[in-house]
Amino acid sequence: MHIHLERTGGGIPRVVDLDDQTLPVDETRRLRQLLADADFFAMPSRPAAGKGAADRFHYLITIADGDRVHTVEASDGAIAGGLQPILQSVLEFAKRKDG
Image 1 (tube, rainbow, N blue to C red):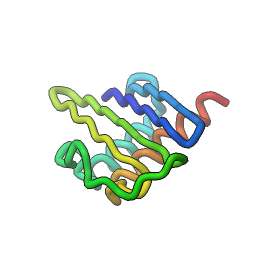
Image 2: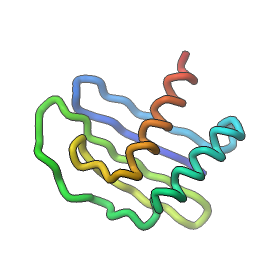
Image 3: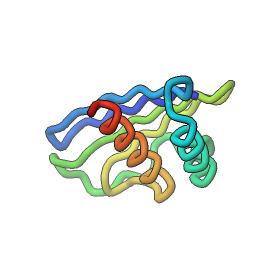
Image 4: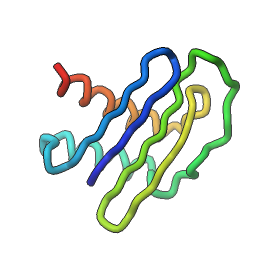
């Protein structure tokens, strides 16, 4: 599984690339569970837009798992409930990894 996340806006851009070959086993299990709980691969690529604001974050996340590849684009205020824990988990792990 490979995860590519781009967060823009809010004055703090961030790009994260994670691969299950380099993630700790418990983190991989947690991410896989979050993906299953959210039914990530069935999420719409662009959920309904929320109200815009200049300081909001915009997310573009692509996950490749075997023959499945799916991209979801969302902004703060229009993040599907199941997507939020995935984004938080990826960003938190990247923060810990970066020290």
